Image: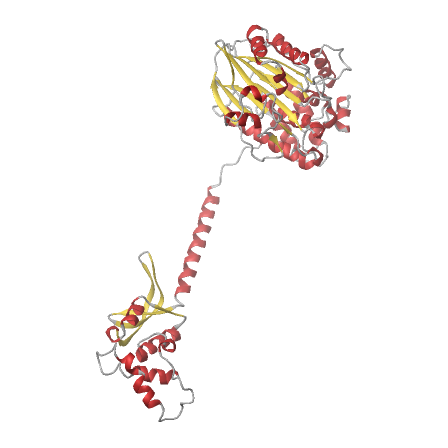
Length: 534
């Protein structure tokens, strides 16, 4: 990709909350929000966290890497807010293009925009994640009414400390030589759409195009920050290092400031970029580093150190080396942070050096940290076997304990047309029975009332062997399992004398004697049971 970029604070804002990066493989625009709370921190942290993607060799997973990196940047913003609650509410949009293996991977969230000019057709590829765009999609608002709507700047999706896993618009697009892309923050919306399209069509030089678009925004009043990136897809050539970007900037702080000043056409050396006010990004140590403080000793600090500013110094040094290694253009709040050394990071972490090393993605270069050279260990097979054996032992023990519990239970059922007592439970575990025959009684099933026969065939659970024997005794005497519930006690309580029960017994057995005409023995049993229970 050939590229050019420019960012401006605008006519009204006091600081630039926009950040952007453009290189041969990556272009990204981020529009921070949160006002004084840290919109510049959000956009700068996000863009600086993504610049290491400006490389080739993704082996087919570039789209996944791009999406994961944006989610990682979102987590970084949440951690920054946790570290400094004053930043609560900050967020940023992201619109990014990653060119890898002949495809262009697109990721977008928020209201920054991406346009493509191909074969004479100028088209907006991104969709604004705003409240008014949702109204337009639902047919409740006409597109021409969106610019004057009072809630046109209300975002529905954004990176920040609001959503732990924000939803991104992702796509993989084909590329053609000559394709031109415009990435911009919403500050460019103050220029009429036809004027933007005409400028992109008619201005062949990328640098002139971005300058013209920003100038048009300033002429329109520019009440917001404005950031513009122009990208052109070209055939790769041996001298593809030549781009429309600025010269590769050196890694020293003075040269960084000089290059930035040259881009802004202001006197070199002592100047500061007007693109960003680092008021929310700076720290005393970072300012010292930008002012000439030697930070070369920072990498020699032990990884286990808890120096609260270790991450800042290391990130600044690594970032400058990363930027100096390839053609690029960094503008806005991210440029101010890189030039001053005030890199938004999580301080006080022992992994700061590891994170800074990973930022460069230069695995082929030997690192100073011995841990960087460790070869990942192959999974030990014995660990897998040990875990499998432990699971098998636990499962076997559980099954045995369950079976042992069933053998403490009893129930009354039917065996060979007779009432029997079983040890266990009446269920089966597949082909395995969970009960065994304990005792077969002399009580025949056909000697019992129909409802008792049905009850026994369905099995009658017992708490223990004694309880099972009690149930059998009740069946033998009364034909029921609960004689207390089946027999009706005599109504006159004082009838305890011997002559009185005779008429009561003669009247009471009448309804119970009817169901058992089969033999002479069952008919007198109810009276005996009631007497026994009494």
